[in-house]
Amino acid sequence: MSEEAVRYDGSHIQVLEGLEAIRKRPGMYVGSTGERGLHQLVYEVAGRAVNEVLAGHAGSVEVALMSDGGVRVTDDGPGIPVEAAGSVGAGPDLEALLTRPYAGAEPGGRHAVPMSLFGTGLCATNALSCRLTAEVRRAGVRWVQEYVRGVALTPPTIAGPATGTGTTIAFWPDVGIFGTETQCSYAVLADHFRQLAFLNRCMDITLTDERTPDLSRPVRFHSPGGARDFVAFLDEKRDAPATPFTPTHPDVFGFEWEDVRMAGTMEVALRWCGSGEERVEGFANSRPTPEGGAHVEGFRDGVAAAVNAYARQRRLLTPADPDFGADRIGEGLTAVVSVKLDHPEFHGATNGRLGGAVVRVCVAQAVRDRLGAWMDRPAGP
Image (cartoon, rainbow, N blue to C red):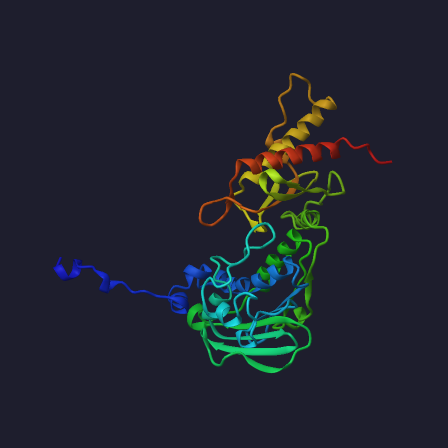
């Protein structure tokens, strides 16, 4: 091998920054250049609007899949600050959010939903769109700005008076990045936003598919019943439609609880039916945890303790009998375990498993006490 072939120094290093880096390596910022990355563009934009609702600054979010292949996300919050309007001290302005990675990082803690993969937010979507338009309604003024592949065509421009306040971002994914198939899946987005509504009672999201006449009416995702509604929904969607759903108890058991020891809250809901496999869905700060973790393990500990205590109290088990095992207890069980923590500890880069021994102890104790009390309640007439 020649000396030239093995020589490697600073001249070989290419430094990419900002939008150039995102367009050069899109998978590093939105996960892929396939369907997953395409939907992540929507989540990056919707995440800012969703967190406005969770913070109490907005009441609702509207997402529309437009007939020309674009996606439009609208909120009724105060409107993103516009530098030209002299919005000093109100947070990153519109151009900063659209062109600078990590400007205005996502809020953290239990009162926010982390929808961005790496915190790039609007910037990633702007960089990977062939076109993006922003409209801000703020202080009685309507501002507009247009971008092409992340580059602003003009500064934010006054387009007349505004009715109400809020922000609308519309974008068209770049076929040069994602190929010719740049149509988002209505079903995938609906599942995602429905889940957010189940896990956050204050959330109010509508999704409209303007591409299909049959779906052109907005579908609203809003769930005052929270995790209880989630369990009922999962039971309705069981994988064996030929087997009638026969709940062991018609009402879904559930509770919410805050525990200072884990610096967070928990919401748990469950129901048993006559047969079927166990289905336990775990979430941490509204993020799915498909690999489980401390909150799911604590839930199983608490359920086992409550069920076995009930069985022994009612003499369904003799002193010589072993406790019911996990397989017996989990048969036909559907449950949702959602924790929201100020400082969640995840294992692995994908955040698929939640850590924290304290979380396990807190969830186990709460489930054992509240499920046990519910099982011991007097039977109705």
